Image 1 (tube, rainbow, N blue to C red):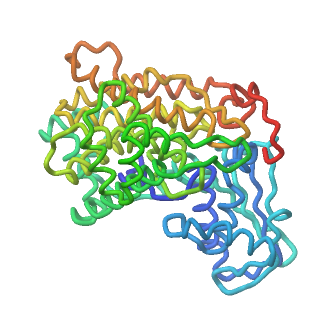
Image 2 (cartoon, rainbow, N blue to C red; image 1 turned 180 degrees about the vertical axis):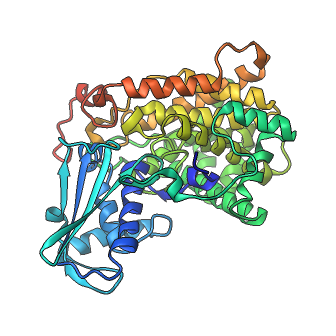
Amino acid sequence: MDSISVFDMLKIGIGPSSSHTLGPWLAVRRWLDEQLTSARPERIEFVLYGSLALTGKGHATDAALQLALLGEQPETVVVDQIPHHLAALAERRQVQLPNGHQLAFDPLQAIVWRGDQTLPEHPNGLCCRYFQAGRWHETVYYSIGGGFVRAAGESPRAQTSVKLPYPCDDAQELLAQCESAQLHLADLVRANERSWRSDAQIDGRLQQIWTVMAEAMFRGCHTQGSLPGGLKVIRRAAAMNRQLLGAKLAASLHQQADWIAAVRAQRASFADTMRWISCFALAVNEENASLARVVTAPTNGAAGVIPAVLMYHLCSSSQASDQKVINDFLMVAAQIGILFKKGATISAAAGGCQAEIGVSSAMAAAALTEALGGSVPQTLMAAEIAMEHHLGLTCDPVAGLVQIPCIERNAMGAVKAVNAAQLALSRDPHDARVSLDEVIQTMAATARDMSSKYKETSQGGLAVNIAVNHPEC
């Protein structure tokens, strides 16, 4: 199968959704680069299908399309300037393509929502089209989860030709490769990652990834108020942070490093440890819901699980080299995510929330197990345990927003990951009756059987059983 890098799984971008925001954004950037280098169209349109149309407004898909058209990049756009960019475009109703050609563009007319139609290759379909010389020229892209984008009819192999020293498409192959080479899982992942970049580049990029994760936690733990979108969901992480640290200490911590040091200095009870894990996860996904910068892990909707579990580990561990611990943790987590992407899906539109929170919990559980000294079989067992108890989890965002139940599910996924790691460390993996490959296969089958109304369409579950009366929704 295709070779997937750690940094394909862990992407820096803007919330609230990797499949509905980041994916369409990257698809339009690709379309501009590949299809409109010399074109001078009279009109351009974006037609959204299936899940992209049904929950796209709540997931800021229209904003992503416009920002991409304006030349902004998810990793570098100034978050605070996003409302200004969108307002300016709405007022002038004109864009300039990368080749310098200017044309009229009214977002209200040029973005078309077709939630009653689904394209054949994936529920998240996007048609980018331009009118020139009397006819429409169309290119269809699919946002297949985690910010991955594929053109219609394109095979995964068309996107990469990298050959890895330790290729593995499933957990059994991964275990065999580790045992044959006598490598810890993190070392094997690094050896594969060297096929793309040097150790210095790997470490530098991992540090960037962790920096974004930690900044999202810090911002989320220090930002009060309600989330955008009309549901009036009150942020909870900041209040939890004040309760856990004490109001006076919390108010004195204005720098991220000081805050992390204060959290690590806490002698938390079991109850407070659980609250800290939840606080970390809530903080990240409250930021995600506010269109702030986060890391797909493996998706934006599940962006809080891995940072929360990693921060928990750093705060409860006496490890001397934090950056190595962080790097190994992130690489192991990414490798487990790669197995799920290859064997099942990381798209909620294709598999429900088991594909997001379930996969992220499995990734975090495996990474924590190796960080705590677990063997490779125990690490894989931890991932299996975490996913086994997320099987069938639906994606039913209320009002199409990544808020209810999405934010709180990150806290639950993080806590389950910690528990799964402890369960795996406490038993002989040879006694396990369920393998990671079997649970991935089961997840894939469950995704196929699941009704579409439970797959990020807001047509079932909590999305239809919670009354929403606010006009913005």
